[in-house]
Structure formats: C-alpha cells, structure tokens
Amino acid sequence: MADNQTGKRAFIIGFTGATGMELLNNLAKNNIFSKIVLIGRRKVDFDDEEIKSWEQRLVDFDNLSKHADDFKDLDVGFCSLGTTRAKAGKDGFYKIDHDYVIESAKLAKEGGCKEFHYVSSAGADKNSMMFYLKTKKQVEEDLAQIGFDRLSIYRPKMLLGKRKECRITDFLGKAVLKPVIAVSPTAISIPIEMVAKAMLINSQNDIKEPVEVIDNAMCYKIGKGDKDIP
Image (cartoon, rainbow, N blue to C red; front, side, top):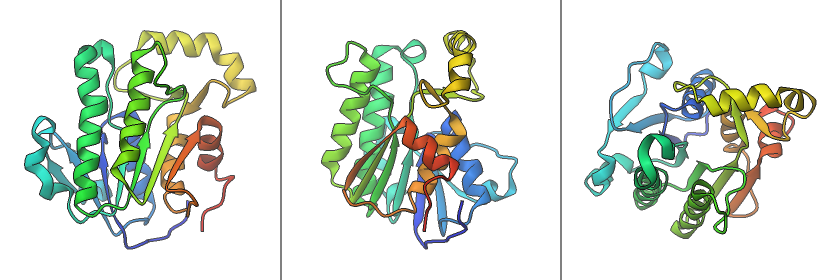
C-alpha cells in the first residue's frame, strides 16, 4: 500500500470487530491520513504503539445526538459496525446494523465528512427473505440518501480469518467448502485482511460516481494490489 499522507482526517466505527481490527493494523503500517479517530462505546487498550497514539472518542450509540461534536471536522469515515441476530436478537441487530450506522453517518456528514466507506454484504437485497440481507440493503440505500461526496459500499462474501467469537456455522462452512476456496478464492469467500486493505487502498483512488458498489471479486483484486493506487 502506498505511503501517501493525504492530509485528510479519518474516523472508524466498528473498530473492535474482525474487519475493524484489520483496518487498524493496516492503517498503523501506512501513513495515509494526518489524523485517525476511533469512535466507540468504550475505551480499548491496544498493544501497538502507533494505534495507542490515536484519539479515542467514547459515545453512547443510543443517544448519538448528544455526540455531534465527536463527529466534527473529519473528512473520511470507515464503518464496519455490526452484530449478529443470534447475539443481539432481531431488534438489537437492526438497531446496531442500521440505526447506529445511519445516525453516525448523518452526524459525520453534518460535521463536514466528505466520504464514507461501509462494509455491507454480498447478496444485500431489499426483497431478500433473509432479514440480514434486507437490512444491509436498507442501510446502503439510506446511506446514499445522506449525500456524501463519495459513498463506497463493499460487499464481501464469507469472511475468512480470526474472529473474537467462534461461530460453529462459519467453522463448518469453511471446512466443507475449503476445496472450493482453494480453487476459486473469490467464489464464496474472502480473507478479512483483503477487505480491510481494499477499503484503505480504494479510499486513495478517485471515483467517477458518487456511489460505488465493490463486489467480492473486486475487493479481492484491490486488496491484493492488482488495482493500482495513485
């Protein structure tokens, strides 16, 4: 990844999840932004000295209107915030995956943010029978209505990599589908690290349209460095 400080100030929400942690690790290795702010509900202690130096702003996601100042004067947003229905229940899942994301994005836009990078999901569809995929599509559509100069939506398939929570369905799925993954890395999956790299590399690229959707194969291609950045 290029060592290209843009002078822009970035923030990340959802930085304690698997994709978010990969974002942090890659940002720590590359001088891309002049300032990085981590916005979350609790303070996190990091081992990496570079990440330790970044500002952490604590917010109550259930009362985000009180935290408008925490989203001010930031140019670029990265969002990998999310949970599972099994963990949070249907209402909790929607609140975190939709409401927290949209309210954060609105405050960021009002505070001067120009571009927003959001991790959605392959198969996001408002007509899907799966509540998860319907919600992801609604988030995409609602983000598009906010009016960022640039909205980049990433739609990865099955995420491969270490997670804090071991999901038995993920474990079994990866074991059964391992031969397919070996033959065609982007057919059904993508390493989490590739998604994080794709987001950071792509944030340095110019785009022609204000809203872009980056599918699993393109995430992989960009993350591998097959698509050059300036």
